[in-house]
Each structure stands twice: as structure tokens, then as C-alpha cells.
Length: 265
Image: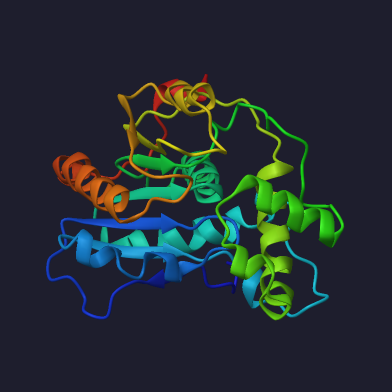
């Protein structure tokens, strides 16, 4: 089992008798701290974040270049945490959507516990190709210029040399996981999918978003919310309301451990 710790509890006060455990996966360059306020918006859920290890590595130490390097340890830890059999779901934003999807498939291949649902936002469907040239390997000036053009990062950060020296190695490593991603064909998942997109998101077109419906044989519901690539307050409140309404009825479903017959095809 990997010694890397991925799961980070979110919220200071444990939820008494939670209905469901929600694992949240952050965007490129983000962290578990992105979900610090989520327990207040989802009071009946136990919220945990999956923290990618990149930000904890010192400068000069190689980061993971492919999700396959991270998934085994992540799956070990989630499977161990689910020994209590509390129903659980995954939610991932941007890069986190891709990680949540691949972790679900990894757990399935192992015959491990499966989430009762997968919720995603802000990322193209896994089988859709990146619609622009990768930027993760650009030299720094060009990289910053492309980040500025893509939006989603304040100008005050892009012009702060000290802040950039801290965040750019992590951001490059995270972007590489998303941009240099090789989708493998496998049978569709058999679980509900809930997808969300900001109405003004410049990074995600409707066709790439709509293709998420192809990854499952279960029901899929795709919604557009107020916001850009990142949801502001109105969009975040709507997202929490939808997640509570969508996931709470699924909390009584047992988490599967055996493979479904269709998955062997």
C-alpha cells in the first residue's frame, strides 16, 4: 500500500450520523482547501477531499506525469476508508473530474467499493480530445500568457513573481495530468452521473460537456449553472443544492464490491 496520504477531512466538526460521504477532487493547481466551506453547504454529508501530492514536493523533485502513477495508492486509501460501508459519491471539478472518473474505473477493476454516483464539472468528457495545443511544457512567459488567455486566474497572481514561483510547478504538473491524458476504452460505468458547467465557462464547450453522458449506462443529468470556469457564490449555492437533492436519495444504496457482469465484456 502507498504511504502517500490522499484523503483530507474537510470541516472542523464531524457530521453526526452522515447520510453519505462525499469525496471531492480539486482542479489543477488547487488543493483540499478549495472545499473548506463545503460542509456548511452540505450539512448532512461527510465531506472529504482528495489532495494530489504535487504541492508537497520540493522544487526539483519529479512530479507524476500520468494519472496511472497516482491511482493505485489513491484506490488503496479510499477502499480502506470505506471499510465502514458508508455510502459514498465522488465529485470532481476540472482536473478533479478526470481523476474521479479514473479512480472509479480503478476501483471497479479491483472489485472494490463503487460510489453510488459520479458528479463532475468543468472538464471535457474523458474520451474527447483536448481542443487546443497543450500548454504545460511552454516556457514561463508563454505559459503565463496562455493562462491569462484561458482565464480563471486573477491578474494579481499572474504578475506576482513570488506567488508564481510557488504555484507554477504544481500547476504545470496538474495540467500535464489533464493535457497528456490517454483515454483507454473500457465498458461504460453503471452508476448515475451528474454533470455541471458554468454558463460562461470559456474552457468547456457544450459538445465536450454533453459527451459525459456516454461514459455510463446509468442515468445522466447535465446542468448549466451561473458562473465561469469556477462557480461564484450563486453558482456554488446552486451546485450544493443540486448535489444534496441528487445524492441524498442514493444514500440508501449499498456500495458494490463485485464486478457487474457487463463489465467483463
